[in-house]
Image (cartoon, protein in one colour):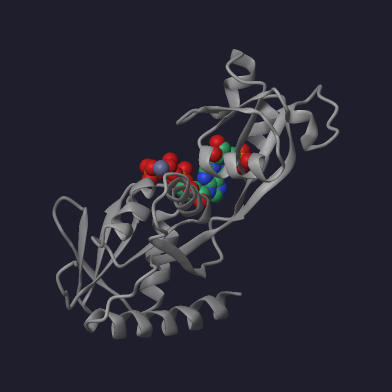
Length: 226
Ligand code: PRT
Ligand code: ZN
């Protein structure tokens, strides 16, 4: 078992779309920090709650490994890594505790503009490019669709033009990226937003009480924002 700790550790994105809103939200909960010189770690001053600044992709794993107690991450990333764990035969290790009301986007299937969309059955035999292979495989399996999942780590939207896939499954917010690539959204796999994630098993030392207090404050702040 992980050693007992008396300080709570929260992983947030270092740079990117969720970095600023995550810090603003935690500040609004009354937290303040002293930043380390390398800007990877923020030492909590008002409360024993420290921040780890990381890539969003690393947040679910840091929680699973017990390195961090909580994390602020997109539901898309959390669900993808959760689904990948289940597909690999691993036990669930983390889950979403709260929706945070920012970072909204949708994980969608998008097809070339000229396609006439008739529904998911049309996808059999196609190649679908995505950075979310586990969620997509679950979605296809639930509909008994036999399609090929082409995993790409970035620039998914150009795959149909390059000929590496027939369609894509990617995050959409304004839809401008799809339009610029002559693609149109046709199915939503997931409605996403930033979530506060935590371990399935809560710590039973001093961190438990800290976590409960933070959640109470968060509920107050997120409600006021709504
Ligand atoms: O460096 P690091 O790995 O931490 O960052 P990252 O590049 O992986 O993530 P980042 O900062 O781009 O996104 C972090 C999270 O923001 C995502 O996991 C989502 O939960 C959320 N989010 C919200 C989005 C978007 N909206 C979004 N529009 N993430 C990505 N996009 C991309 C999308 O992939 C597509 O390329 O923006 C493009 C589409 O945008 P529209 O407006 O043209 O539709
Ligand atoms: Zn990332």
